[in-house]
Image (cartoon, rainbow, N blue to C red; front, side):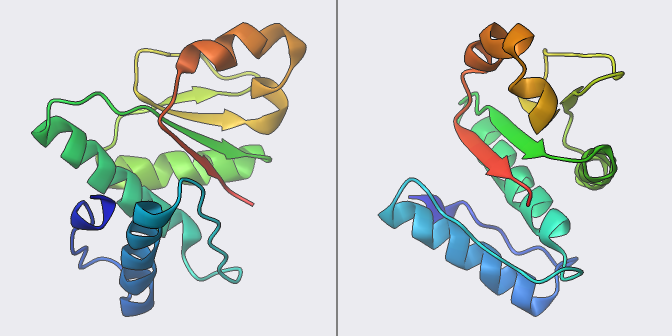
Length: 135
């Protein structure tokens, strides 16, 4: 099922496109996939493309798909947000000092904020289908 969701993304390098197809295929076999790439090889761009494909599939199938992306530094959160914007993926940010907009089905969260005891109810209420952890 998942491998059919992956679309060709001409903005990705060939190794990134291959990785994307491998990830979607792996989801057909198991629920949890860990994929590692060296620093500077475009992990954020890759998972932004994956999210775009999942969101497009959701729209085509009138299915609401919720995705949570977790990162540990504000610089990564901002980089993720910029990449999602390039793919025209609307999203909210859950991080200290940032305004929250939980209406979006894609949320980018700092691990410190999302796991803080004051946000336990928030984390549970997100009810996500996919979680992507960056580093």
